[in-house]
Image: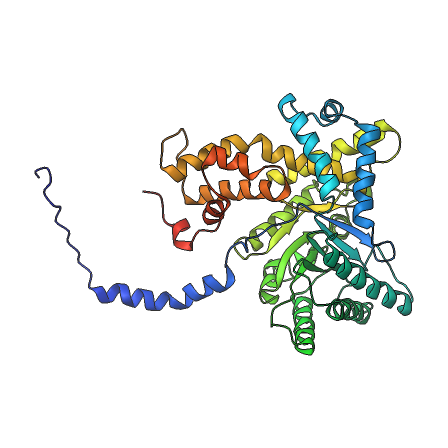
Length: 434
């Protein structure tokens, strides 16, 4: 065939065949869109801090930041000493330490949950009523005066019979208090603990529906996290993955799955000395959670460590190394959020997160720039990889590990560009790069 001669194109199927197939798959297309809408976009906090309902105060967030800074001043007063404890490279030592201190001064907590469950325990009804009303007042005030964490809310008691009515009443008092103070804040997050059956999730959905009706709110306005703390929440008696059924039972209200390290481990009979987020039982549970949540818009959070960085410097350093290592391990497994139980955990939370994003930043930026410009390189990336690369950079920007100026300098892309790559249309992901 001569140069420039047009290729002859022939087909054998009638147009009606494609139309019939499309018609037959229309219900599947709709099901895909409903069940797997993709990541909701927006920021995911790197951690959740739990504070008992009777301890939470107007200055809790600032107090945690100040205590974390004091721990650094006492046990790692400069970049070199902090890097030596955690094994940070010379290149990372100064930028990580500087950013950690700046974060503790500016935004020490990204997500705070006032706890009315295990951290609060059983109390007289009048006392819990007052604590719930107080939590609503303080959180509403924090959002009003600009001192709130980006995300705040409560963990209520679970839907099991002995505490169900108490949990429902606490939630009602808290949400009503927020409404009376001006409305529900955008950063509101609720946590439902010890969920064992999908029917308990359905009950939470019905409860929130009734509250929305009572207060004239838009249907679906209030979402919640599901805490995975029992073996039955992973594997049902019929062999199915219960957590997948829970996500569907939430009717698009589920925002996260949070792994409960110690309750789940104890449920499986793991002895106290070995209850940790890197135990094989924990890895199994979180892997099931991760697969069940993939594509649904529900995000997965790791649990916590109960080894506190307190006491003499040697013990603090040991606890810091443990917490840093567990956080880095979780990040490598795509668990981008975890629990922190003590102000002393905050420095190593941010150190691990900042190091994770900064050490891979230049390579990720270069790969994404090549993809965006369709230029060559030693890796042939596809749309799914571009999604992962842009998501990595966005997470780094959201937490403060990266600055938009340095990302733009190395990629030539704006934040809007990154968000476009991070949330492609379904067809863009499933089609192979040609």
